[in-house]
Length: 334
Image (cartoon, rainbow, N blue to C red; front, side, top):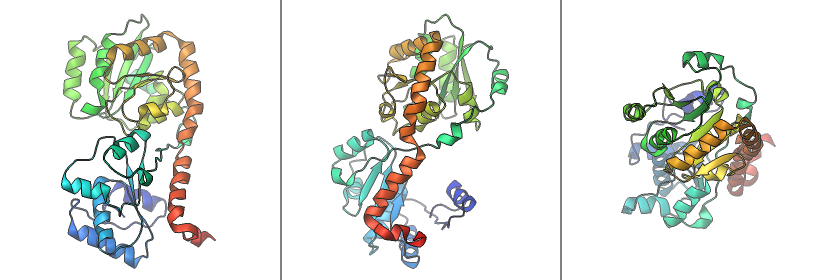
């Protein structure tokens, strides 16, 4: 169930799954949580798994109103829950059977918010490795962005918002000392676009940094990149890094949030302290200057990323479902 006319509804219909549209006007929507309860009872639903903060609240309210089924809550952000009375009630309530954070960093934050550790199981987000099994044609991109043929391409894919911290990336580019020709593509849009462009201009980097805006052709862009970089202050996990690893790219990234859990420093990546533009610049310089090192790091990442396949995510999640439902989970197929 989910919001009507949502991407989730389209995805379910495309794959032949039942979808129940449920309009949710906020986390205190009384009609919505009553509809959740009614639907679960009428369809004999055995378990609820929520994926957003508002859905979590509504499902918890439904369960508190005589809906006796397990409640599982995924959490993808690494900031602390608020300390208000309502927030403590919501996150510490015993009706939340399991939390599934997508990184150990998020798990640590939740434990620090006095959520019982025995109710927290880390389930890393996974990606479809097959999506990146073949090189996507990308020659048109060099022409579109007027990138010289021999220039090394450094790519960043992220929304242009504060916690993604492209400001530090731009400062790092200004500190690079390589004599090799390179370009930096910042892919994404967001409220900081004008500010970041002004920063790049003030540092005389207009000939080095290209802002592409929002793009749908991410696999092609990843095929164009020689190096991937992500300089976030905070990150639940950072699946853009996994996409880059699957493409066999060497990486320079911060250790913000769960990013460091995916990467092996000095083997597939240079993992730098958050906000440390000098260290980031040094890592980028080393990779720009060495084709051998880029190849070595990229090969390592392509193998390492298999730990984060979507299949592994599904399998671990199903084991948690099975702990509640047992054979009922597979009843229709037996």
